[in-house]
Image (cartoon, rainbow, N blue to C red; front, side):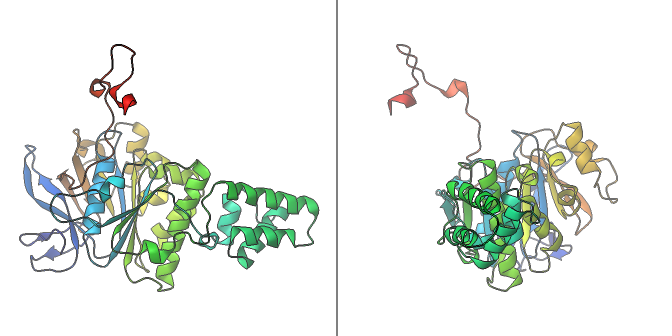
Length: 371
């Protein structure tokens, strides 16, 4: 059991008292925080069953750090397939040497997906084409009949559709090709379904291709479990999740949120703007981990879905310092104050400071410029 409790205690998300000899996987998240701020008993989170988890907090208070802690725990657990979509390029450090038990990790810094990863509807949404339009109908049909982007283009050109529709469809497919993310040898669910944590670095992509990769991974993991093509239970973790609720990634994420439990697909969304994710993301989350929030909009988004078992308002319970969280657990209908543990791998999300830069007084260049 990853991060096994040392005595009988609740594990967040499990809904029962867990004994020390329980071999169901659980991850060490941190420690309970007493009223005086001191640390108490270890805090664990369930990794055995599927969950929808929301991690929120304003910039600089540890949201991405907490996601990294959870990723480390999942990488060390049996029976799960953790995947991190990284739009900021801060999680490749999971692959660096760790303190204590190794963290198996694979970093993909040039993500490619196969054309078949997206279904016909997703292709139309990605290219901003109505399925009922002439060009949209051609792309829809091509996505059904072809397995590569080149074959989709050839499929469109071979039709007897009006020239204006064919040209529009081809132009949109050429745009998708220019993104450089579609490859017949691209990532598939079998590759993503390994026991190591797979970090998919999408930080170098523009919004549309970034959304395409995030949506493609979500659809691939969900379909693979529905079709029983992979054995491990996927945990799909997404930083800056609000970015993907404003693009074509949203549909795949909401599918996992509303239908992922049955096939065993978990989703972890981390965001500094809970008001910018869908209401479904907030309401369907059975575990909420909240760092400090100060925006009225963001507080209102969480309080709109505040569970009835909370005796005080969420705003009154929110922590004030980095690394402090409150954890709302639907399985046990409890709310816990906690401190997130230190990461075992380096954290890549720290902000640079001007005071750390050494400048050559002669020419104003930093020392790094001479490397």
